[in-house]
Image (cartoon, rainbow, N blue to C red):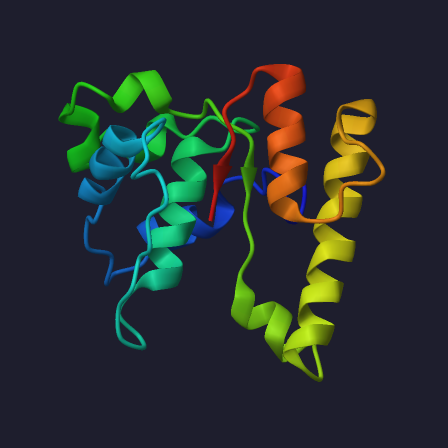
Amino acid sequence: MGIYLNPGNQAFAEALNSEIYVDKSGLIEYTNKVLGTKQKYVCVSRPRRFGKSMAADMLNAYYDRSCDSSEMFEKLEISEKSSYAAHLNQYPVIFMNMQKFLSRSESVDHMVRYLQKKVLAEVREMYGESVKRNRTSCRSIGRSICSETGIICVYY
């Protein structure tokens, strides 16, 4: 498990253990439905303090191939859906909390450079030769990994 690439399911485990957790796993069913389609880019937009980070942690825990999250999801709504088992912990996930990057940066330009440096270093460490050195964006790195390994990549 890495910091950005396949960070595991600990953040979602904390949410599940919280008294205020509300099952929002229906979002996973929709996301499964649009994987591999033109609608695969999903924006989870909500007002401040309405669960965007928790939703991202949930999606990460569900898709992240570096961990086994089956026990976490077995009592949630998604476990009753036909697409549940097919996608559970099947994909490499790049997880980036943009607020954390921005808080460590003096400008948006600095944030983008910092983000690329940190994320791409971790991806190159994991995939080595599958990632060409001249690739500098997360999207081009993802395409490179997908085309050379045959793995579908999930982005947040």
